[in-house]
Length: 286
Image (cartoon, rainbow, N blue to C red; front, side, top):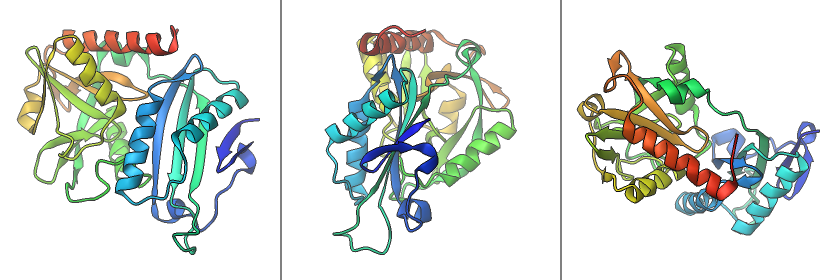
């Protein structure tokens, strides 16, 4: 029977429940991290936990736990579910409304399921993305944090899927390129790699951080700056990143063909480097 880690213990998934007064359930007052495990090792776990702690502090979310507690809980869950290649989600909410802040205990839920990778053809041929009809507000205090208030993101992603696209690309209210609904975005022009500044604002993606380091190691020129629709459509290559998709090539934006319509050399080089890093940290994957 599938187990989840709820608050302080492992419980059967079918018997797990949270309070009807939970602030995450009622108001979206929560944070989450999604991360993969390969061969029983969680990839970039420290980076995910670091981001969680930073966001909890910035948004005044209660978090009485230490990083070791989260780490131990995740590995106990993987063992209980007999999983080696897994998709792990850690959710931390503000706890039940109605108690004083001093007494209120956050809700911690960790789930782990079999990792289902994206189709191989996405990486071989690239994907279609569309422009999001909504706008990202730089004044929104939750923008740039991975909160459980994800309705607008899911709406945009659903609209993209209805148009047979894999992702929706967001711009800010002042028309700067931001990110995907569930991903960060990178552009390649010539031999240079550019991506939106964190204070656009965009999510400080774990994979985004790793990719920028890999690019430096490969002597690829990088530039973190304000980008526009013209930069997007003028790119020779485009790719998206998140922890589950890793590095995903984009070969079409709406009806516009990116470059020559094929996965470009810079993207291929970084995909290879990223997969090699996973093997180095977690062992060879199938």
